[in-house]
Length: 112
Image (cartoon, rainbow, N blue to C red):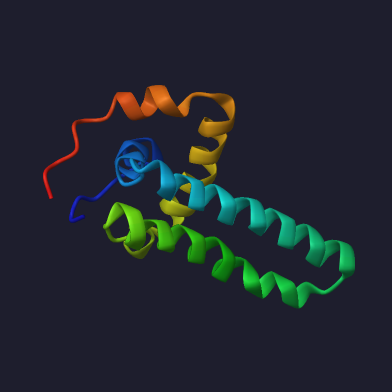
């Protein structure tokens, strides 16, 4: 992961390439949904300390997917902002049905 990206549009295909395993993506989606749920609970209850759980929930599920299924290092470590944005764009692409075609456009996966 030594490559430098100058824009999110340039980064996103790389990001998708790091999320080829469906199980990893599902864990990302679960984490994102739980982040939204917990944020809503925090706001509705007025217990804003619950917001401190958001990174643990979101990253916990995502990193479990990377270490357990993808067997790669999460891009968050090198590209935290782009990776956070990538989580939400990937979820949007999955919900809108665009993800499969974007995954098919990727270069073949290198041998590990």
